[in-house]
Image 1: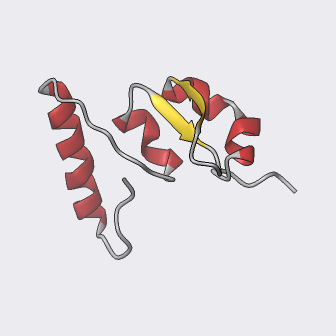
Image 2: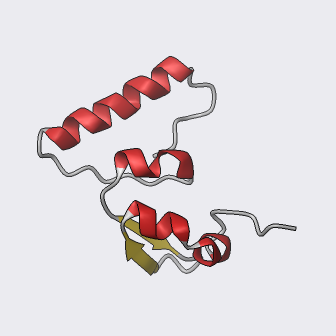
Length: 81
């Protein structure tokens, strides 16, 4: 789940609030995103897919975001120059 190009900040905030509300209502929400900035807000568990579309890692948002080598190898983050 990445907001489409051209969405306003207000629209993005609405979408994130909606996801939060659904989670608090006990609903399971499955999303896909490359936007690492929202992962901690919208996810309790994170599954990272590799280039072959297989799960290469699973964990809490904090565990996944702390693994810089994983993020680089999965093309979710650029290697520092």
